[in-house]
Image (tube, rainbow, N blue to C red; front, side, top):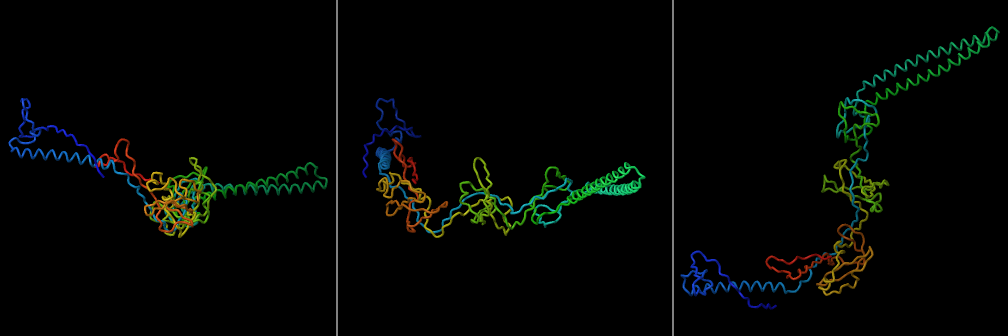
Length: 464
């Protein structure tokens, strides 16, 4: 390559005089013609002064010529070929998953509350306490309930006394009615008296029934008071571990509207479940029995496994996004998983072992017309580059011997990194293009590399 440059017209300005140099008198009628007189000492020999002056001029001329030559070279050299990045077609497994998030929960969790109001007098369990079914876990102050039981027993005793009185009254009425009937048969008693005696018997019988009802009511009140007294002793309904305690000794619990929660007991913690929220667009791919893997923040390097147990029909709508709860059964033999942990879930909806696969980036490569022209290709390849394909078809570009070639392929399942190639496909080891990098064009009116030392030209950009 030849570089043509015109002779440079140099104009050297006189610099400031150095210390100790002799400054010529410019007002003299005939100033000295030496332009470098201020740079060189006047007491040096003339030959030495001429040599130094010649070297200074040659150095300035060489620097200007080098700068002009480098700029001309970088401004006139031709564009380089695009940089092609490839990856090999490999063989392995491809797994398609549905991602979701969920919360780790016990399979069985029971809230233990109080059915009566009162003051907590004793607690027999705390956080993380393992309890058995029927074990006493709390007591309420029974003083008020003991008084209610005693009052109810008094009511029962009074009702029984009234019952005895009613029975005696009925017996007396029945005896008087018998005497009246005998006298009436002998014509010794008026009919009205006989009727009055009969009515007395009926009244006493009705009073006896009322008294019997009062006795039953009093007995029911006694039973209710006894039940309330028994409820001051709170027992565990299931065997498990206490995960929550909501009261302290001395605190008053009120059961007027709802049962106050004292403890929350989780069942067997060696089996847990994950309540995951599945987006409505992925619900059609979730089926009971599918394998699940997930991680939790507490153990980022541990992958836990589970199985889809149920996909519930109850939708949840938040910010116009509909999700459905999926229940995932998870074994927890080491008790690493704890209630409330956030799980990042992947449900395996399809898996293909030992298949040909390509990186997903290779399916997104779309060479531009300029790139194809740089490699001597027409704007559209023989396979129909740029045309729409079905969802099961795709296009790859192979690169071998400096040649780009399009290949139409049939696609299988896809995960986040690779895609399955269905037969007939490419052979394992074939190099496919994953990225093409070209240099950006220089700005208008400015060379691509206007300054070879600072690199003012723009860098490369990838083309996919």
